[in-house]
Amino acid sequence: MSLLGIDVGTTGTKAVAFNLDGEVVASAYREYPLLSPKPGWLELDAHQVTEAILEAIREVAARTKHDPVRAISVSCQGEAAVPVSKDGEILYNTPISFDARTDELARWWAERMSPKEVFRITGMPLHPMYTILKVLWMREHEPEVFRRVWKFLCYEEYVFYLLGLEPTTDYSLAARTMAFDVRQKRWSERMLGVAELSEDIFPKVAPSGTAVGVVPRGKAEEFGLPRGVVVVTGGHDQPCNALGSGVVGEGLAAYGVGTVECIAPAFKEVRHPERLLAHNFTCYPHVAPELSVTLAFNFTGGSLLRWYRDTFGEREREEAERLGKDPYDLILSDLPEGPTELLVLPHFTMTGTPYFDVKAKGAILGLTLSTSKKEFVKALLEGVTMEMRLNMELLEEAGVQVHELRLTGGGAKSPVWSQIKADILGHPISTLWVSEATSLGTAILAGVAVGEFRSVEEAAGRLVRVRETFEPDPGRHRQYAERFELYKELYPSLKDILHRA
Image (cartoon, rainbow, N blue to C red):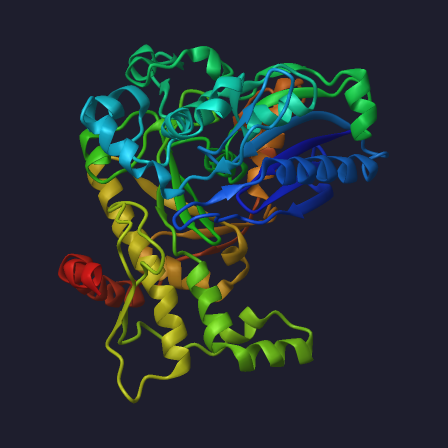
């Protein structure tokens, strides 16, 4: 038998089936485009996402006949919601997290409710990204569409709906709507009152790892699934990634290195929640029981290395194609020892935490005629990690302690980058045998719900295995600590100039 974890992301859906030893039995991935019909708008066509979900599930189901799927759980991006009519029609495209059309509504909300109160109830810093503001935008700008809406479904509960079950969200994903009371574990009367919305427009809520039901026979045949498959609540993708990385207690954090870099530590309580709010950190339920998570992230992240590859890496791309290698392996080979003489402010998109500055721009300082191409590459890696060190320093000031980071995503494949991160952050960086940590986290939730594991802690202990640990080099860490003091001055010194540039 196998456990199926489905992850509905911003640009693609992945379905991965694991056996009870945590080994991948089958996987499938389907991409879809990110649409921008107007400047600042970023959205998905839910019809295309639906097709990707259906195809991914069917492919995995067809390839697991000898290890039939027993249970399914789902993780997904936060905030994005599908407006669905009572008869199942998709009524509008899905604005994703950093679609900018709700900026004015966030300011409107701030006039009616203080950011401190919003954070106290929802665990979210007031920001345009959250689902409740997208709902208000639709009510204001697409009233005829809004009039027909039965439910706004984030992609976790939308998958359940496609499988023929009652749409049910979990606490972690419900929190990303900014309409959920994270203490009372229910839709917030206060938030819905400000918005003048009924809670009926959102789905039922249950803890992560709750069995929602069994896939109906007709739906099972449609998807190629065996009879009796149990469907289980999963969660927001970052907490699921943390669970799949073994983050089921304090002191550990998942470190996702992809297009976006995100550190997700777990904790039981935080000593200074006001400091989390001051730096735009969240505080909301983990998918593991009795724990909370926060997120420190940088939107530029690994996309900075991709920008280098596509802009300056033509020779490496050609050589990699000739040799049958990954161009990143060539780009990251033979980097200079020790810290570079460059400082990179990695705000090439917008910032994530702690600034939430949508007008920010990147900067590269210290260039001379003797700067080499390899030094330039290494400086990009250093800059991204310096930004994450800044975030970790602020988390520690709030009382969130991290002693070890579990690296996941595409960046985890590079020993060079892993060592740079360990040297800058001053903490051990561990890579894992299973790279699909988000899907594994959802599979763990599915396995616990059907009794294959006694707890998420037991399952994580059995299934999450460290592949390699990179310890920080004390000498290089001291050197980077000196460079970090300079790095902390970059954004405050350059902010106004870059806003006007």
